[in-house]
Length: 194
Image 1 (cartoon, rainbow, N blue to C red):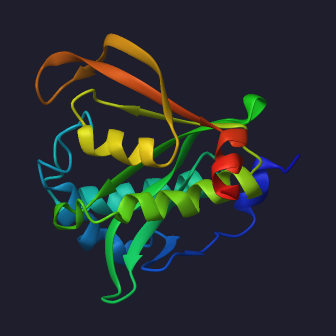
Image 2 (image 1 turned 120 degrees about the vertical axis):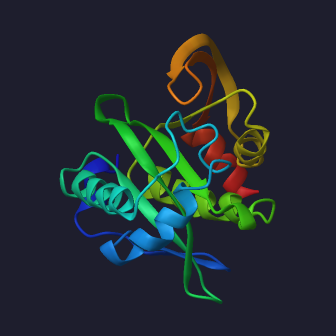
């Protein structure tokens, strides 16, 4: 079985037909700030939109630290045509003993509905299953996040759980539900072979 930790030897750069997925670097802070200050992008994140560029710089530093400490990996999604960061995606909450990880992602609103995240996550899942040796990948979303649900279903994820009021949403001062999706390596491999 492949070693989950092997991914941390050197940051893997991934390429898809339209995008390059690379490490998030300090110079990306302004682009990340533009994305993460949009209330629509952060609508289901469970935290308020970013208010300052300094918050984005801190976020970038945390992503770098997570990679260095082998706690997670997050890629910048860069549009090849414009050499522009348009979102990020990655694995976090690695559960090494069970070969499982959770995914997270966000995308600039002007890129919604163009298949960006489906394309980027497909490349990321290949790394997770083929290189890291993950057995399963999990995604937790707000029940009203239809766009995210569609992306996950296109990639073969299935709904496995529904937790009622398990998450406190500070921006709205209320508890919200969570839908849990997962994808097994064998199901991913079967779809990839088709």
